[in-house]
Picture 1 (cartoon, rainbow, N blue to C red):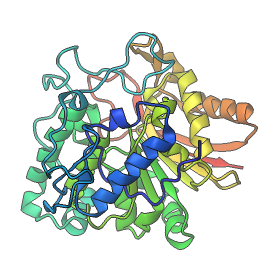
Picture 2: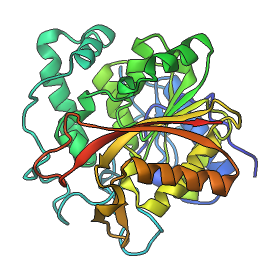
Picture 3: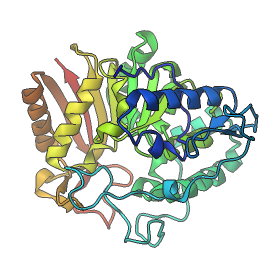
Picture 4: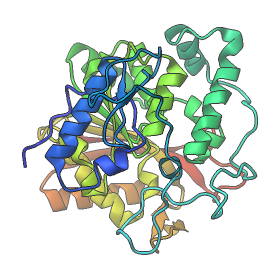
Length: 376
C-alpha cells in the first residue's frame, strides 16, 4: 500500500459514517473516500459516507452541489451510534484513550462535580480572541460559549468541558511560547496539536501571527473539531488541517501516518494524563515519529500532574492505572523513550497551580504539569 499524504486535505468535520470508512485495512481505499469527502466540502457539499455516497447541504451556508452518484441532495442526520462514545472495556487493547467519567447509562449526566451550569469568568485573552478574531459581539460571548459547551458535553463529558476550562488557553503559558511563535511565523515551521479538542490553542497561535496553513490538529472525537469552527466562526477562513485519529489504533491512525517525519513541533495539551505509565511511553514513542528526525524538534504541552507522581493512580477499565506524573516520573518516561528509540531528549518540566487544578473532587496534590521536550 502506498503512504497517505494528508497535507492537501483541509478536513473540516467528521462525517457520521467515518467509522465505516476506516473500518477496514484498505488504507488506500479509505484515503480515496476521504479525499472525495474533502473535495465535496471544498465545493460546499459533504459526501455522506454513512450510506456510501450522496451529498447534503454545506456546513455553513447551505450551498448545494450535485450528488456524486446522482442521488438527491439531502441533509444527513448523525447516526445514533456515531453520537455515543464507545468506551473501551476489559482487555480490548493495552491502554485506553478515554476512561469513562460517567456512570454507565448516564454518559451525559450533569449531576457531577465537574459540570458548572454557568461561566464564572472568561480569560481576557480568550475573550479577546472571541471578540476580535471571531467577531462575536461582547454581550453575546457568554451565551455563544455556553451553547457550544452544551453540544460538546453531548459528545463526551470531559471535566475540561464541564468546567469551561477549554476557555483557558494553555499553549501560551509555556515560557517557550514566544520562541514557538517565532519558529512558526518567521521560519515557516510546522506544528501538530494532538488531542486538540476545539483547537483553541491553534486559534491563539493564528491570532498571534502563525500561518494557519502550517498548523495541524487531530483528536479522537471529530465532533470537537467541528464545534471548534462553530466556537470561533472561522470555518471559511482558517487554513489549518484537522482530522480524527486514534493514536493507539493502527486502523484509525492512517491520516496521522501521513505526517510522520514532517512536524517541527507536536503540542500535547491535556493529553498524556489519559494513559498509564507504559502506555504513555508507547504514545510518546509514536509522537516522536511525527517529528523531523533532527536536533531542535520539540514536544511541548501540559497535563494533569501530581506532587506525588506515580504514587497516585486512578484505575481504568482496562485494569491499568492512570498516571498523574510528577517531574521525576515524567523524566523517566522520556528516558525510556530515548533508550528504546536511540534518541536523546532534554526535558524541562514544572508543576504549577492553575484554574481547574486543586478542585475538591480531585486527588490531593493535583497540579498542572507543563513541559518542553527538545531533541538533542
